[in-house]
Image (tube, rainbow, N blue to C red; front, side):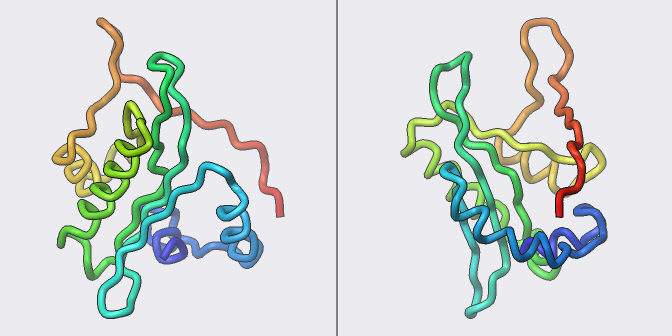
Amino acid sequence: MLDSYASDPRGGSEPLSAQVRDRLIPGLKSHPTTRIWLAWDAGQAVGLCVGFLGFSTFQARPLLNIHDLAVVPGRRGGGVGRALLSAAESHARQAGCCKLTLEVQDDNHPARGLYERFGFRDVKYGDSGPTRFLSKNLGNLT
């Protein structure tokens, strides 16, 4: 599932390298806050949601960051993504989380529409503009 998403233009148009595929499942299993939901239809995986528990210092409560939400191309727009988000939200509520977080590319209008319909909004504090998600690459470790 994740390789399909990585191969999509939104995921970078490149399949996961052999090294990443070898490390992915053991890495997710060993990471203590990993949460994964899979959507199945007739024995085939059609969607994936990968999240990680974090902590909100402003709320002093856990949060759930949705790191990956992927649906196979032929099933997009059919409710799979919404079902995965609902499962993640249900888990977050049971875990006492104060919020769900995620990042989305600004020009990914279908995903943004799904997230907005689900209740996600830009983060703003007072009169400030929207909060930005930033990243610093630390190099490609193989």
